Image (cartoon, rainbow, N blue to C red; front, side, top):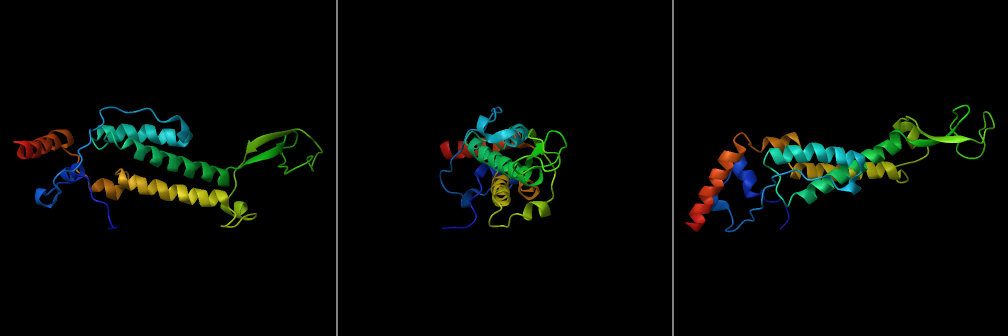
Length: 190
């Protein structure tokens, strides 16, 4: 069966939409994260910044469980991919003449004949990027869009968008959530 994935019980409890008669007998009950983890080394600078911001907020909100860290990792990797691809389009690194600052594709500088160059980022608009590429040959553009799509999918799953976040009531997150879960535990094991 395809369709919308089922919401975890903890989210339904926080939203106030939990109905025991509609739930399966045994839903996994993952351990909630009690502390923030360090960002994985491989996710890049933009992903690490996002990891730091999100992990602290998700843990303190009582939303992050121990089995959610991989989803956060993929979310942050996707964001990093999006940002690095965006930089490649809008801030490409060019071979620049050390004497006059002219951008030189290859060979000596056509303006001053210099053979000394620096690699330097410069700002460019999307139209400049597309002059030599199209949607089929613009690898950076395609990668940027795929990274953004992947990020948004995981952002919704982690409750990072306004709509997803508005569906979660965390006003009394710890005390109410615990008491509801304790009640269910006692009913099923009492």
